[in-house]
Image 1 (cartoon, rainbow, N blue to C red):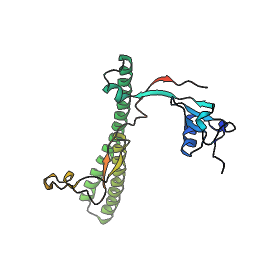
Image 2 (image 1 turned 90 degrees about the horizontal axis):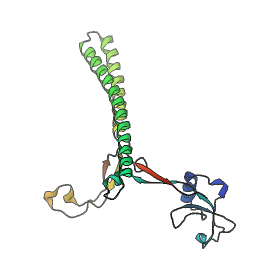
Image 3 (image 1 turned 90 degrees about the vertical axis):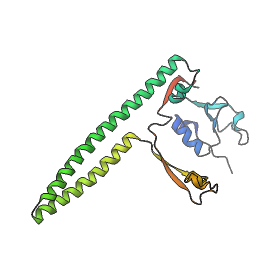
Image 4 (image 1 turned 120 degrees about the horizontal axis):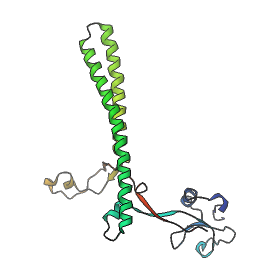
Length: 207
C-alpha cells in the first residue's frame, strides 16, 4: 500500500502543516532543528523520509511563554519587559471584558428584583400572572449573564479527570491509601493559555 503523502502545494502555512501532520502524512515531518518540513513525495523513501531534502519549509515564529520568562532568573531585561507587557495586556483585556459583562448582570439583576417586588404587591390575578412571566424571563436572562461573566473572568475553564487519587486525599483523617473506585472531576480555572502568553522573539528561517 502506497504511503500517504501531502502535495507540497497544498501546504502553505502552519495550520495546514499541522492538519496533515495529524493525519500521518509521511512527507510532513519535523526537522532536527524543529523546522516544519514538507518533503518532496517523488524523492521520499517511505522508510527513510528524513534522509531527503525538504521541498518546502513552513515559516513560523519562535517565542517564550511570558510566565516562564518572568519566573526565569536568566532572561534578559528586554525579554522580561516584553513578558510583563504581554501579561498586562491580557489582564487588562480580561478585566475590561469582565467589567462589561458584570455591568449587564447588575442591570438585569436590578430589573429582576423590581419585577419580583411588583409581583409580590400585585393584587389582581392578571397582574400577578404578567409579573410572574416577567420574573421568569429575567431569571433566564440573569443566568445567561452570569455565564457570560464567568466566561469573561475565566475564558479557559476545563475539566480534569482524577483517577489515581487516594481516599485520604478526600478525607485525610481516614489515612486510607486505597485508590478511589470512580473518577473524580474537578474544574480548572485558567484565564490564559500558553498560546496567548507567547512573547515573540525571532522569526524562523524560510526556504
